[in-house]
Picture (cartoon, one colour):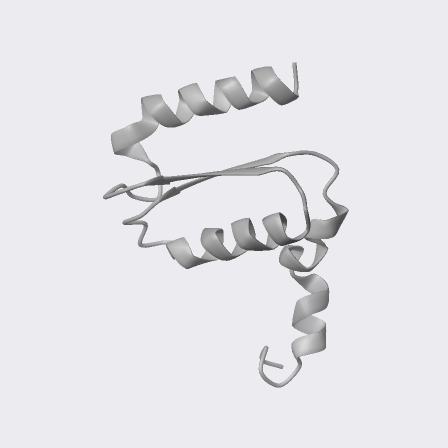
Length: 88
């Protein structure tokens, strides 16, 4: 059924329902002009992770698309710094 008809099922399979189980930091990147995935999805995930008291970083690239093509270098520099800080 649809999410409206069976919200318990859809909540059970949504990764957003399990943010309290995160064991490490999360970094989100989103192009504000993404036509594939709405910016609101990343904003909601960011807010849910914050509400769960988990470490999260959120970067929005104004005017950029799903591939973050216009800010690729910046996004990669931020990702490398994130991995250097948390994974290395």
